[in-house]
Image: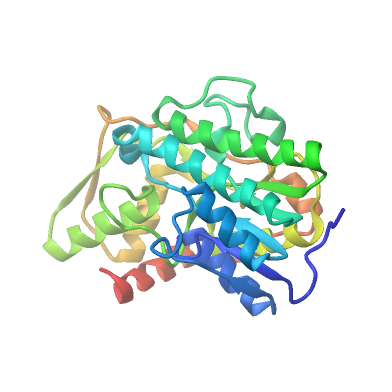
Length: 312
């Protein structure tokens, strides 16, 4: 069984235009790998037959499955069918297509939302399936859990060197700033930017501000993924995070400072908070030698600057 990603390998990155995929494609390119990509218009990854045909035609040495339908609490609550079915179809197509093309190395990117809502903190990989999920994103979480099971199944039945990584909350260049579908960090950047631009004295945010969250820059995630592709080969998923968390209120203060907004911040407790705390145990990743390099305050400033240049 191949356990290492060989130098100059040809790697198909599914989802290369997204936050995660674009960062992984950059790191792989910088490290001398031959990165293969297809846009959504060129290849709909929900189409199992066309995905299999593409992979059998190009026959990459490895596949990184970073493509997904993603979003924050509002998007998950509004479009649960899309979050469940799109992700199931993408995963089934790409992982089965990789096997059909005799690709022996694959990395599946999941999410920390796979873990129970009230899992002991920090959350170890062994917490999977030990309790109820957070209701606001259950369809998405179930799809990602199915992806982990698919990876395990191909390992057990066919001996494939397929692995899974479960990232914490991510941010960075290429993030989604759409007000309807973005995650909390880019959503807050936009809210504070628009409040500053419009001269508003107050910004009202969802929930109580007390839930705690962990945030990792996408470039740090990409470095972790490359490390896993090179050195990890086990059926257990691996948590990818920074090992530290903060409250949403503290995050809001960090973002307001980066944006330069000096007005008041109020909270609407009638809106959902989501999971009270979600900090990952990254001991397994640390044993491989991983440590994040980009502190949150700097990463937020750089992400805000990127958005100003590309879409604000």
